[in-house]
Length: 220
Image 1 (cartoon, rainbow, N blue to C red):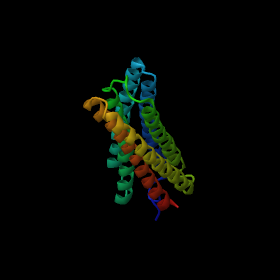
Image 2: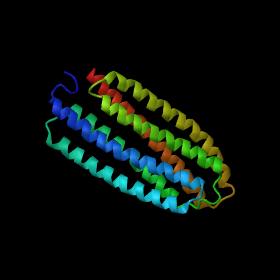
Image 3: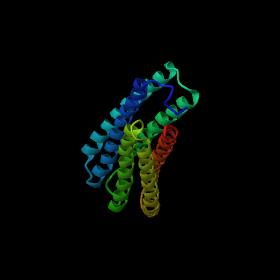
Image 4: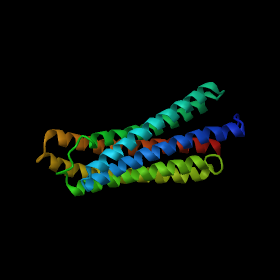
């Protein structure tokens, strides 16, 4: 018996549709969190404030969709293994938005005046990889029912992006350590936490890829 064999075709699409709606909100959160870094590069305080509002708004909407999905899963008759996989998929995806909100909140507490441009560019590259990964997550979800083998390829690409992000993080960390020698302790700590939150978000993207891969393999 495959993962989806006990659910009606309509219910299969309902589950995926709800999840894609959730991912759409997560994509928005990450996109606006990435734009906050871009506004830091040009020291646009109004832009930073505006993007933080958007991050907060979409993260709240993502939470609402998450709760709706979990409510659906609690009402329907799902096989325990399948329910566990779907819950893991939803909660891990939601963590991506939570970490993106985290790095945005920390950015809103930092003065952008003296942060090295090269550091911000690398942080933006890390955030761009997270954003690319969320778009791939949506693509993979759309193919879960129609072409599960393609989900494996997409999951591999998300994994590659996480590895690339980790490499960039090592370079950023060196720059932040140097920055810490010349800046306020509070600024230093906040900047490191921004870096860590972006990395954690990328790690969660990889975890989502693993879950999507697992569901796809059970569906082939």
